[in-house]
Length: 188
Image 1 (tube, rainbow, N blue to C red):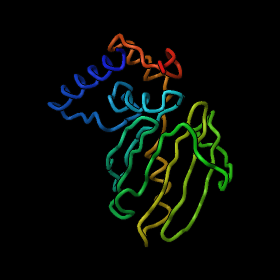
Image 2: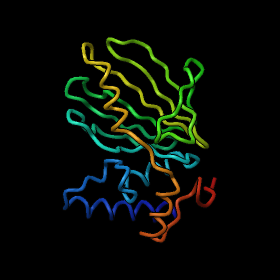
Image 3: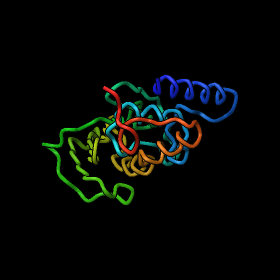
Image 4: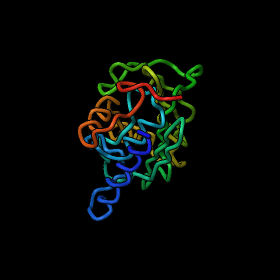
């Protein structure tokens, strides 16, 4: 019953957004009430962090997202690095067996961070962020000939938000409870 109520609340929020300039399909870090963040939270209820967009440098654009039970994928396009230049995957776990642990960036504190470089041209690499209840992977797949230094811009564009922030926002705005980490236990 609660899932249906949350979906109705998301539909109502999205319908209102269709008449304005805000884009509810973008998981913007500063918009904890964005319906896409609510859906991300429910796609991996155990995850304690959710991927989001901090800022988009010139040349980068939000390409889209896919939310399903068990995970969320969103991607960024770039005018030189190509379509789906970066895919961001939220999952319950990720395989870091072939990766090297690296120090976390300032916005990754509390996470174990791994890097798995593959090639420089075209630039292909995976950055994995492990945390209680889940993992976020940044999969860089740049077009041939694009500068590998664009990874610095991509990293600046991406961040995460604590799931508890979204749980609190849903409770405050809709008087509903998301199940999972930082909230009530999910049924089933």
